Image (cartoon, rainbow, N blue to C red):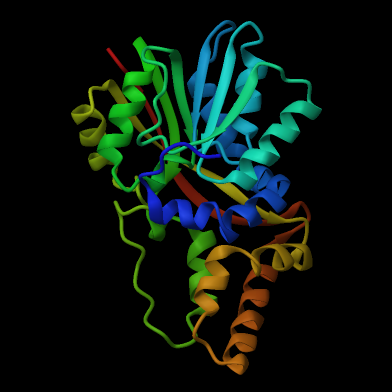
Length: 281
């Protein structure tokens, strides 16, 4: 059972259908984000014996890789989704990672052991806080003096072709509002100046926010990618309210847009994220 939840709206989504879909397609999401995952781990620079806290761990790929990097230490992954936590535990057990553990928890309020971790990291999991000030204050308390923070989060909509393509194909003549920057969601940490100010206000130092651009993998080929993308949360949300004929035409446009990005190595879209590192004094 989950501990106290403060981020109620995001918990309702991630502990519901959205989380279930990510748990089902865990391997696809891990492959889609592989390049950013590698950059995050490089920036985290985990040493053996360290204690790692993974915020919004999802299906646990970053937690498990952190556990592998610190066989003499431990890695704790927390997430709002019970289905993804179940998947993470199952994968860690199958991989024999006894030093990786997982808790369904809200990082805004979870009572982490004070000064109990050398590193907090997050792979696209820290963007969804309803109260980011409370969350990063709580994460800071969990870090020992001199403890490190490393996270990756999406840049704005205009920099992310993968989401622009989905929205353009499914607009169906509608004027779609832009997802708000700074609100809980994919662009919760999209403003680098705001991120730096937020981390400063919550006690972090030596803050660096670095732009990163990597290809976003969507599938092995156009057919495979369409089958995956068409059942994701953003697509389901954009199809809501459309008449059946309009839905069919919108999906046809999405299929054509995906086919235009098919290559010999799979379907790829442009994407951009921020790599953020900091230290807690």
